[in-house]
Amino acid sequence: MLFSSDRRRLPGPKGPSAELIRAVVEMKQRNPNWGCLRIAQQMDLAFHIQIDKDVVRRILARHYRPGQDSDGPSWLTFLGHMKDVSGALRRLSYFVRPH
Image 1: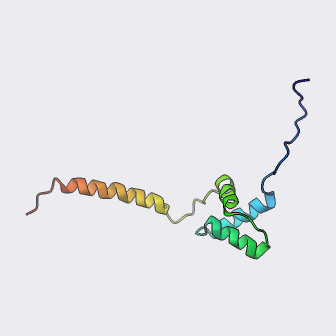
Image 2: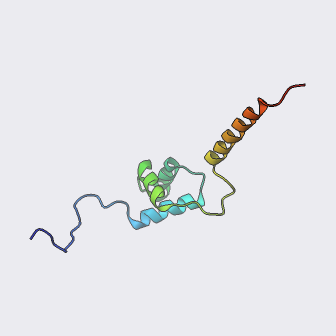
Image 3: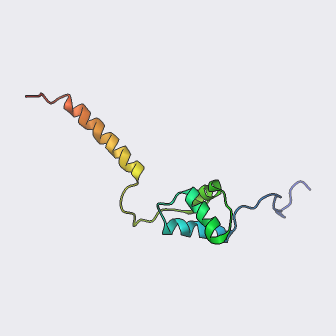
């Protein structure tokens, strides 16, 4: 038989547990300014769970979405807008004659 509907799991790592994912996401929600390295360090200090910062990054990329109650645009968005505004002001200054 070439195909079987009986799906077996492949051997190897299964990824982080659901409890670990919830703990990382909750820690990020409570401390939105913390980065992946800080969360990994705090997980080690608080729960004695050693987790790599890249694992935290992958968990947050897949399971964490910032809330709508944020204080405004992200820092990178703000910088992008400022770049657009400063370019427009610089182009506008070519048309203004000094007195």
